[in-house]
Length: 71
Image 1: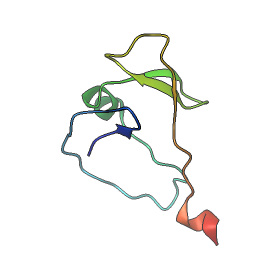
Image 2: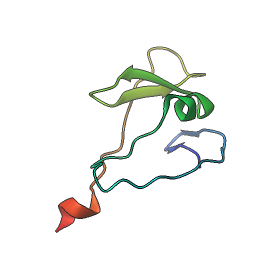
Image 3: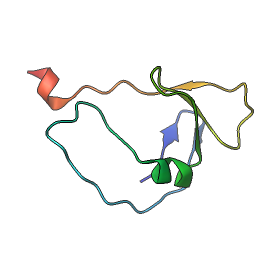
């Protein structure tokens, strides 16, 4: 998988996917975030940047709609 933003993207990494009926949003491990070179600005607000970007660059996580919430 890889992270694709409008103006940049991470390298591609091989992952194992686990689907949980209890999770209502996508979750990634700290190891995957490291492999994708993601630097977290604020976990709760979904703010992040790629590690190679300037520290003042802030990206917002895409909003996810669970298939369960679409009913």
